[in-house]
Image 1 (cartoon, rainbow, N blue to C red):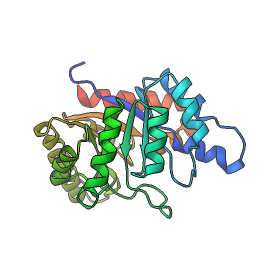
Image 2: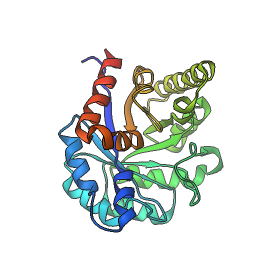
Image 3: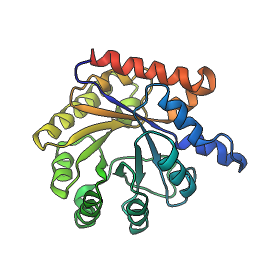
Image 4: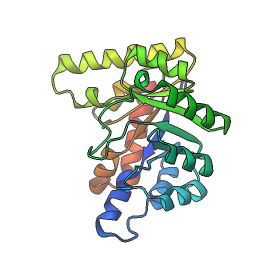
Length: 244
């Protein structure tokens, strides 16, 4: 296939379901193993400050046993930097984080924390970890990401996916396309994710500059009705179809 796109599965909400009862089932590692057999290229987890879903023990088990590259989403804090440098995941994506939010509400504002991001990204890059910043689809943020040393950006697709009016959805898609094009100007990778479902994945995956999609909540929810393997294969099919 010309210009294939990578598929990252976020398994945070497997851990959310497990934690609702406080036991060991369902196991995020088992979900990662199913993903490996179903066309997924990497596993994404968000280790939050409050450990509301993924725990430190999950991070260690997934790093050692899931069989796929591990992408660690984390806040730009010294605690998380220490953990990342100790565990050495394949990739780290720095995201904004508020304790009271239900899910990540937007992209990181690079301009308000340039010095901190430069310091953290430098240490992560030196350790051989692929670095990314989770940003709103904004050309200026793309340029800023390159300036502080990120090797990739992940464009927040939430506003596009949540838009109910056709005109608003088209406007948000245009923003994604413009930001994606800007990544080629700065020679950094373009990823995308947040809120993607069957009815929104094709237009995002069709953006030629996007090299990786990270999808989670919809897949885990849909798996309740269709099974995880079937849901993953359907999403993989739609992503590949968009590239063709």
